[in-house]
Amino acid sequence: MKLWDKGYPLDGRIESFTVGKDRELDLFLAPYDIEGTIAHVTMLQSVGLLEKEELEVLLPALEALHSKALAGKFTIDEGVEDVHSQVEFLLTEELGEVGKKVHSGRSRNDQVLVDLKLFARSELKKTRAAVKELFDTLLERSEATRDILMPGYTHMQVAMPSSFGLWFGAYAESLCNDMELINAAMRVVNRNPLGSAAGYGSSAPLDRDMTTSLLHFDGLDVNSVYAQMSRGKTERIVSFAMASAAETVGRLAMDCCLFGSQNFGFVHLPDLLTTGSSIMPHKKNPDVFELLRARCNRINSIPEQIRMITGNLPSGYFRDMQLVKEIFIPMFAEMDDCLSIASYAVRNLEVKDGLMDDPLYQQAFSVEEVNRRVSGEGIPFRDAYRSVGKEIQDGTFVFKGTLHHTHQGSIGNLCNERIRERMEKLMDSCF
Image 1 (cartoon, rainbow, N blue to C red):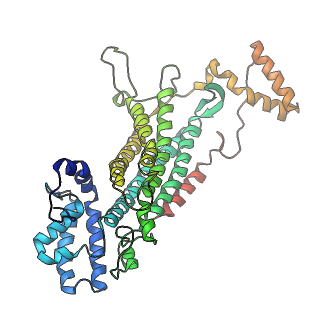
Image 2: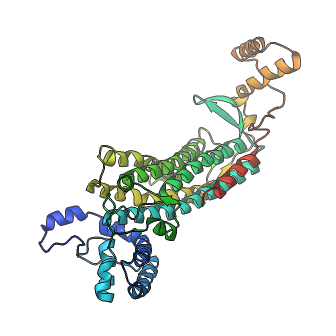
Image 3: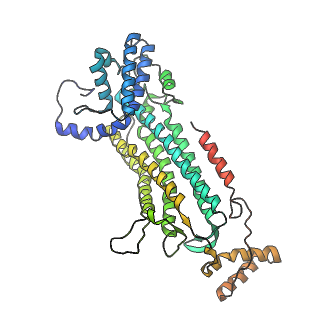
């Protein structure tokens, strides 16, 4: 069944090529397509395009389909093109002529727009929760390891003292910025395109504000042409937010791969979270972090993939948009899976105490000694810098003092409560 069927057949190969993965991917959109239809028919009755008696039979049928879709029992029959066609087909099969009236004043173009926005809104809420879980885990580890020192690096050279508390906390704060972008994406998503039809509105007396309220959108994509232009752009904006979170997780995974190697030995995964080699009996591989890194890199590529599909399209709808669904819909499950497994791995990550007792890291305290001479002995900074540098060159440098890092955000003053307060505000500021 095709909503656009005009009574002539379509070449089978062309049909298969143009439908693509729509029937498979539309199952993810089914609950939202039905929610959009419930709002649309309610509005149609209010403007006189449906009788009250017709609405009274449509709503129970749609609610039953919605329950079926939420339970994962909604299917798209062989030969039915998409979820929109299947819903109308089932309503017509059950209710007769009234089922044919649900499409008044809309197009599959604004149907899929509203489906994708409702889907993305729901998925972004899940992603926000997964980001918050990882954030909480990182901040808990930061507090627990705040006094355990580790070397800090610049240019992959030993630089200055750091701490595991500072390291874990850095990734927690990075997630705050990611949450800023996710919230922004939420606000872009949460605008109603329904009623824009094929991109040029409708001569039907639609009440778009009513469907906006019924679907709990913040407002309208007002201009009907723009509503269609937002397809692809909205997905790209959302994918940028996902890519930002993926970059944070991927970089954390890279650190864990590096710091877990024998050359560093800063962190250790329990044996049950590692894999082995089929030839080398000693191997305990951090595959979880390597796959996190790879999967996050894949998510990072999604904004560019969407841009390459939609970037040079003029205004109006084009079938190119269909391919965006193949990239966009699976992205959320992969992102949430990465966030969840990252939380689990970080929670079980073991850190090594006493690292900075190794003479290998003695030079990391050079700035501490320079500052001690400046503040304690009144030596000008450049003179202290040169004298410490000469001691290092001569092999005579030894630091026997104590660390004095007191400013906000340093190893002696993590200010984790301020980072947590920021995240709590971000969680409260959107939905």
